[in-house]
Length: 450
Image 1 (cartoon, one colour):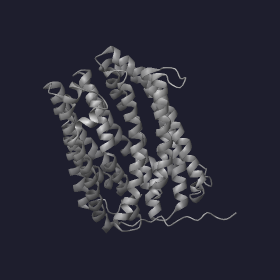
Image 2 (cartoon, rainbow, N blue to C red):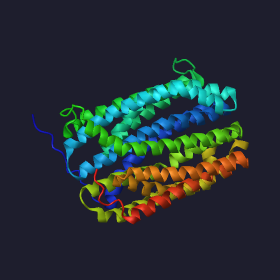
Image 3 (cartoon, rainbow, N blue to C red):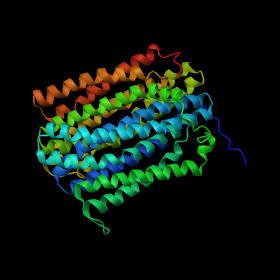
Image 4 (cartoon, one colour):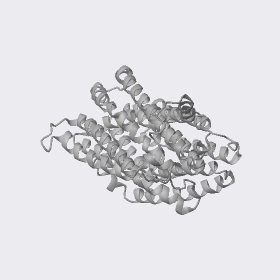
């Protein structure tokens, strides 16, 4: 049998290399956001309360989704470091052990949800009807977690080894499946039962499973599993588990704390009524779509910083991060300008009349905060790429304290409008950016071995 050749995995720091990594990631991130927006558009057809409830269910599931993203980011940095060192078999071992960790965490998420979610949500959501609708949806939706986590693992592998062009196949399959099944299950088309609000949960689970099957078929078809010797090292090694968990645990905690706090924000918004909650849920769509470029350049930063450190080129880290920041900011600026020129065009997908009038000032606040995000998230992922993930957690903790105090005082104590509440995004990203920036500039990360 002809041996499978492995390309040189070491990256350069040119603009073309940055864009070559980031653009496929952007497309891969766009498709799930299209899924989320499609869900909300279909659910808004059921009524404003369903759209409002989708805000809480979406953020709850996102708590567990970002735990997977934390594992993905830590594993991605490790894989990129081994790629910079040109050690393909070590990459295969990391991926193999990462999959087992993902499955265990997914099982824990399902158990935690069934034990604690109903009690917590009933005690914090003021409207009993919304509470029961949310709980029933979540107890269905959480079964998609194993599919999601295994699907996320492909990000760590393909991004970490500079093969982002393959990301699109799984995400396209997921998007197509989700749109068709949303339409079918929510409203009862194509001979399917009309499941209403719960239909979106079933559609999303099946879509995630479809995306998972397609992307792993691509990995097999392109013989990527042979390039990195996935099945040559099937013996479980405690040292590899420990390495992945040591690197990923601070990121898992960081992402989980962040989104749990966002759930807290949405619960405070729910106290202001269904309209405020529906508008805030719509703002999640803004973050999802307009933040795609920022998050794609963030993932690129993580990979490239780790890769060039693995090559022993630490002196190139600061110039690289500055270059990525400029590109990330420029791309986000275009989207922000468009959103502020025609806010009605975007908001009309989710409501009309008073809804658009009340949502427009919130949209302006959120969209401009995205410019700070475009800078801050790149610098934060530069910290991740250095391997000093404990610093990520410390930055997140300090930021979350400031954020939580702000939203409580503004929304609960002073009872100001949600427009003031969403200014919390400025507080969040400015705090995160300033700490990550000064840490990278300090050079304290140099010499870290992972």
